[in-house]
Image 1 (tube, rainbow, N blue to C red):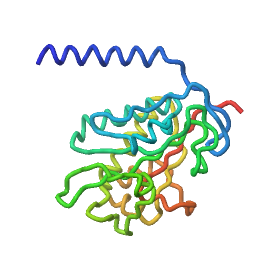
Image 2: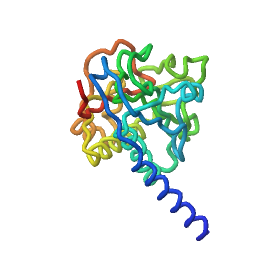
Image 3: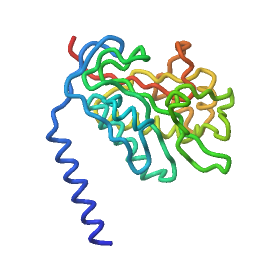
Length: 228
């Protein structure tokens, strides 16, 4: 056990050094009209999270700004320590060089990330949302007004903890979260959780009706100084 722990520590140290040596990203323009240089590709999986699709990862649809990369992984690390039983799935982010990212209207400069809602199964166990090409890699899943889809139910408490973990990681990294886009009706259920008041006080949730429903995922835009 001591050897395994020592090896893990060395691996984490090596990973930290590697990340420190990587060039930081440079973003341009806005989420709706921009690009990025030196974007970082998110890992396809971790101890408590996975990417939405191996195909999407292979196609390079999960690149982000280096600052966002750190925030996303720091939040997952915090959740693993505090809620190890919870499973999370992140969605699409953007291209390596940014630019038009169909079918999304944003995601152009590395500062937008989609996160699929955490869910529990019929037994109450936290499981990844079932995503496949048959449901457009998760984006065509439709939840009811009470947060249900087939045999799954949105885990609003786990979602609240994730959002607050992202906010904390962003604050530590000197980055601001511009907005959270999530279905307006489902927002009400999210705000009824034990951390609902904290969410409303610390984060800005869009009240506009999005062009697509955003019930199966929540979209987050970060603010990082970008070149014009």
